[in-house]
Length: 111
Image (cartoon, rainbow, N blue to C red):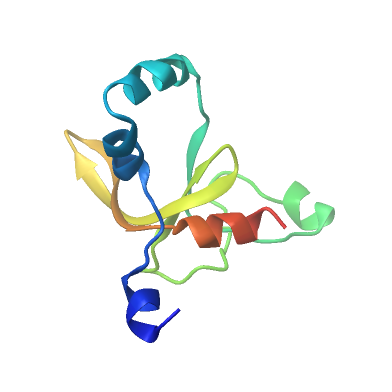
């Protein structure tokens, strides 16, 4: 395979799958649309000793490993799928997606 052929190769996405298989593909995967998923946004993590945890009270501050301004991690069923930034919409917090994890990176998470 020449260099030109390698650079033009890309991984197929959902859109390409639907285009290849036509409208029948949408009907075949409709059953997936009702499957509930757990979506969470991780602000950061830390490790604590039990004795330190028991000393926490109202007003205590827990220092996280992430720095201010770093992107939040969006997890679906505890697997990283995207990163984003915190936004406020109608006085509620939300996340604006800034980076979608590539399929290759998602496969590496499975190991």
